[in-house]
Length: 428
Image (cartoon, rainbow, N blue to C red):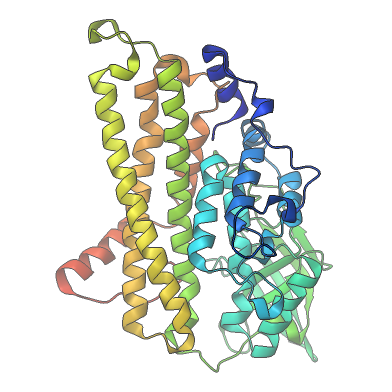
């Protein structure tokens, strides 16, 4: 899938059909209209829904990227689609889908719009927080309330940021301070965050309605990429916290499964990186085949027959094949680990984390090579801002700074050379 500007240019060059004939108008559809050949006709096909929405979002991605701010319309389309129910168990009214499919959907959205992939996928990692850190009653409440109210969760945990303090006030609590890099906070319904509790001098997770009095979402996200993720800061001014909203269940505090959220977020990043690279290569392929002119010294009539251009595409394809295989293998191991639940062993958790780290490092490296290198294959005219090809690199370059790749490679080296199992943390 490509942006409207790119598609328009290519279609003008090839006299193909209008973009309006190719983009499905979903404005009058709901999720039931998007079901295809799934065996259970009453259960929607989430991947088909995501693909249809991604096609719709592709029509405006370049303009929205330039504007930044909140993708309000697109988030409302996600609400209408039913996809917010994806990983919520069927027993709570959700679709009960697995993480393999969730990762595939992240990748699908990222091919077109990695900002949407970002805010949508982090909804899942919010909604399972009570499952991992709360009591059974809190888990069930937040699953069911999310279904009932169609809540869209965001991410304001940011464990490296210790500027938020939690204090007791009678039977309740108060939050004061701020968090930086709070992805998707604007237009969200539920905001999970992490604060240092003064009585215990350790960090606890709090789940709050985004519109709670005292929460101020700052419009200070102005980075070169991921421009529609609202990843700025949130200020908390004496915010009330009810006992139900504080997650402090210590029943399974030493269990490896308690740390599985880091594996989920890391593999999701790998799939978004991969999706960006796949989208970039697909857009470059269309442009190269239809718009790039052969270099005079090449001796060929079409740029698509230039030996050096073919060499680049061959290398990129091999890299993407490797990244795809590693991401898919890691997803299978992650799902197997999730299925173990509280019985997950430290060894199983480590093997899962290693597979994810390998996938993420590969997607990171291959993706940066492709998103910056496609201009060499497409030629000078492709750098015109009207095509928006640069948004692939800007988004990937911004997002790959989430946590340092060098530390991932060090961990993989320690595993490969010394058979040393990595210890779980917020980024592994």
